[in-house]
Length: 413
Image (cartoon, rainbow, N blue to C red; front, side, top):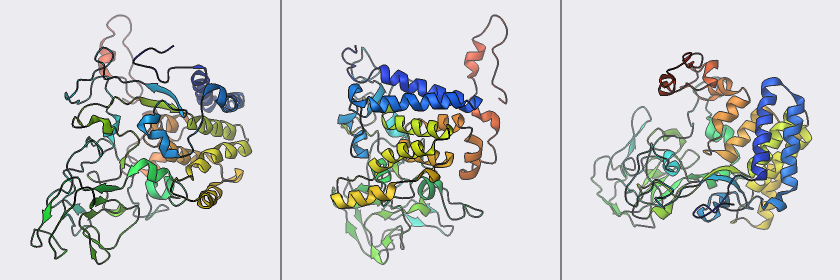
C-alpha cells in the first residue's frame, strides 16, 4: 500500500495488465503476430469491463482529467509522484528550478515566452512575420506559468504539394474543433491582461491611431485564434484591438498556443519553482486507444471503431452546451469501421494525448516515424532516417564500461 506523502496512484493490477497489452501490441507490430494483437485487445477489453472494480472511468468532460484536484481521480491509472517534502523530493520553496534533478517541470516545457513576446504594438513585417514591438501586455504569473519554451505544436503551413495550405496541428489533428472539445481543453488561446499598460497613440508602430490603457483582469492582452483574422495583429477587421491578435499564420517559435493540461497555479509567487503535481503517466482513456489499435491490427475494425467512438463521444461533451447540443456533437463525432486506419488512430492519439509523453513511442511502435515526419514536418523531414527509430546511447554510459568488450553504440550514431 502507498504511504504518506504518496497516497495516489501506484502500480496496480490494471496498470500491469495495461502495460502487458502495450508490450504485446509492440511485439505484434515487430513480428506481425495476430495472436499478440488479439491478446492485447482482450486484455484491454477486460480492464474496461472491470473498470468499476478497479475504480477507473472516464470523466464526462475531457478537461476534468487535467484539473489538479483530479490528478488522483478515476481517470488516472499511474503517476510519477512529486512532493514538497524535501525528504522525498527535490523541492525548495522559492528555490526555482532549471532541470537536471528529479523535478516536475512539465507544466513549463510547452509554454511560449508570453512576457517578452506580447508587445502591444507588434506588427507584421513585409515577409508576413510577426515582429514584437511595444510594451509587453503580460508579466509572468502563476496562472499562465513559467515560459520555459522547449516544445510547440507543429503548425507549419505547407507551401505546395498534397498538403498545400494546411498544417498538421489544425488541419489534421484538431480539425473538428466545433464538435471536439479537446483543442479548447488542451491549449491557452486567450491571455487576459495581468498588468495595466498605457499605449500612446503616437507610440512606435501603434497603427490603431488611438491611445488607451489596459484593464487588469478584463482586457485581452493576447488572442491566439485558431483561424485567420483580418487586420491582425492590431485589428479585428477594422476594429482596433487593445492587445494583439496572432492567428495561425503568425505563430512561430516565440508565440503559439501553450499546452495547459499540466499548469500548476499553486506555485503562487514562486512560479519558477518545479511543480508538485504528479506526472500522470497513464490515463484510462488510453486503454481504449490501445484496444482500438490492437483490434485494428487483428482485422476487427468493428470493435476498433467502437473503442475509438467511446473516446470521441466523450470529447464531444462541453459543460457550456445544452443537452441537445451535446447529443448533436456526439453524433457528429461517431466514426464507422471503414474510417479506421492506422493514420486515423495516430491522429486520434494526437487529439487525446497531446503533450502526454507518448508520441515518440507511438510512431516507433507502429513503424510510422520516418513516414509521418516526412509527411508533416518539413524541417526534420529531409534529415530523418530509419536508424532514428532508436535513440543514441549516452556517451557517458559507454565510457563507464571499462571491463570486457566495449559497450556498443546504436547503429547510425
